[in-house]
Length: 138
Image (tube, rainbow, N blue to C red; front, top):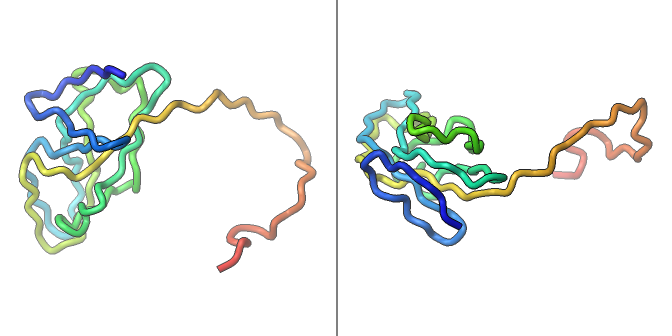
């Protein structure tokens, strides 16, 4: 599958199996509890019918002390203009951290969009209850 990308002068992301690494497009200094959207330096035209699922790389917190503010990211297909640069909304949990430009901090994969959903309102579902939230055990 061919995917059009504008790297804005940055390196083309590295592919590792199904996941593709994303790197910082700038050096970033953060203090504990700072929030910053770190530029990943790419704008991508996703194939029709796909979205991008973005998560931190497994070593990102260990090496840099940052977490992805919303746990995972979703880039939809219409976020595809040259100025629609992908970012990593980071929260720093370390005292101080300096992340050099070109550091791989996130990874993404392309996912097929689900079929459209049409809800049908009903008064009762008629299925057995499982016991409420958290009812499957410890």
